[in-house]
Length: 506
Ligand SMILES: Cc1cc2nc3c(=O)[nH]c(=O)nc-3n(C[C@H](O)[C@H](O)[C@H](O)COP(=O)(O)O)c2cc1C
Ligand code: SF4
Image 1 (cartoon, rainbow, N blue to C red):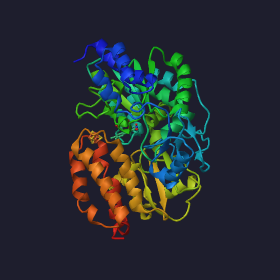
Image 2 (spheres, rainbow, N blue to C red):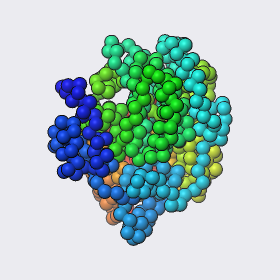
Image 3 (spheres, rainbow, N blue to C red):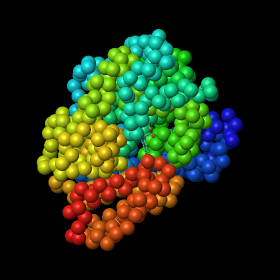
Image 4 (cartoon, rainbow, N blue to C red):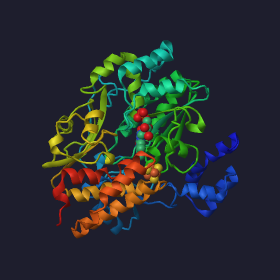
C-alpha cells in the first residue's frame, strides 16, 4: 500500500511524461527524480499509452469503420507520398468528418467531408445542443435547496439510465455512494469517448459544457463529494479549450466544490470505468475485477460516482422540470437521447431524439440515406451489425438487447451496398485487437486470432480460416474480465448470422 504522498506523486507521472514529449530514457529518468516512482515502473506505464509511448510528432489518421468507408487508406497513402509521416490510429470520435485526421499538434484537419448537423434549437429538449448556453447555475441552486434525498428521488422518477453504454439506472449509483460510511468521495466524469461511430460527448463538450458541469456539481452536492475529476481524451483539443472556458465560470458558481481536468493519453480501454480510475492513479489502464464497484471502492479506494458526459448533461433539466417530464420525453424508454449517425447518410451528426426512435427516424433527421442501405451498426463497434429489416426497431436498451445487439454509446453507422461486409467486420476487429489491454488471455489472443482469420478469408476467399471462430468467440465472452473482450467478437458473429452470403467461398 502506497503512502498518501507516494500515491499523489504516482498520479503525476503520465502528465509529466506528456510534458516531456513522450517516453525516452532521459524523460523517464527526470520523472523518476521528480516523483520517486521507480524508472522501470514509469517506463512500463508510459508505454501503455499511444500518445506518449512514441516520442515525435506525426499526423494521425483514423482507422475506424466510417473513416475506412470514406477512404482513410487512400488519404494515408496520399499524405505519405507528400512526405508527411502518418500513424493509423483507433477512432478519433470525428466519424461525421470522415476520414478524420489530426495534425502533429492534435488539431483536427478536415480534408474533405460532408455537411454535418445537430438538432436545431428547441427549448423543450433537455440537452438542446443547438440552443443558447445558460450560465446561471439556477438548477444547481435549486438542487441545493431541495437536498440530496429529494434530488435522488427526482432522478429515480426520471428513469435516467447512464448514457455511457451500460444503461445502468443513475439513481442507484448515487444512493450507493451516499450509503457508504467513508466521507471522502469523488465524482468522475467520463469524457474518454472513443468507440467507432461515437462522437456525441464531443458535441456536448463543444456546445453545452456548462450543462454537463452543472450536472456534475449537482451530483457532487448530493453525494457529498468535494472534488470532481473530468477525464477527457487527449485528442480532444478544441473540446478541452471549450471545457476550460466553461470551468472558469463554473469555479465561482459551485465553490467550494473543485473541478480537476485530467487528460487521457490515447487508450480506448480507459473509457471502462475501472481502467479510467487506474489511469487517473498513474497506472496502466487495465480494468479491475468487480466487485468491489467504484461506488464502494473507486478513485483512491474511496466511494466514487462516475458518469458519462451525456448523463451529467441531462441532470440540470431533470432537476428543473421534474422526473416525470423527462421520462415522458422517451418513446419506449425514459428521456431523450443523443444519437450519433455517420456512414452512408447525407448529413451525419448528433441528433437529440426521443429514446426509442428508429433508424429510419434518425436518418430522416440526418437528411436521408446515401445509396442503397444494406446494414447498420446501432451502438458502436461492440453492437455488431444488423440488416435493414431492423430499420423500424426502437433504438433503445431493451429492444436492441433482445435483437442480440446493444444501444451502447448510440454511435449509429449506416453501410450501403457498396461495402463488403467481411471487410467491415475486419475493420471493427482491428479496433478491438489494437485496443485490448492484454490483461486476459481470451481477449488478448482471441482479438488477434479473429482479426487474422477474417483477414485471411478476405484475402483468399476460403472459409477454412473461420472454422474455429465460434469457439474462440465463446471463450472470449466467457473468460474476459471486462466488456471489451466480452463483445469483441460481436461484429463477426452478427455479420455471419445476418449476412451469410458475405462469408461464402469466393
Ligand atoms: C471497453 C469499454 C469502454 C468504455 N468507454 C466508455 C466511454 O468512452 N465513455 C463512457 O462514458 N463510458 C464508457 N464505458 C462505460 C463505463 O465503464 C461506465 O459504465 C460509464 O462511464 C458510467 O457512466 P454512466 O452511468 O453515466 O453510463 C466503457 C465501457 C467499456 C467496457
Ligand atoms: S477483456 Fe480485454 S480489454 Fe478487458 S481487461 Fe481483459 S484483456 Fe483487457
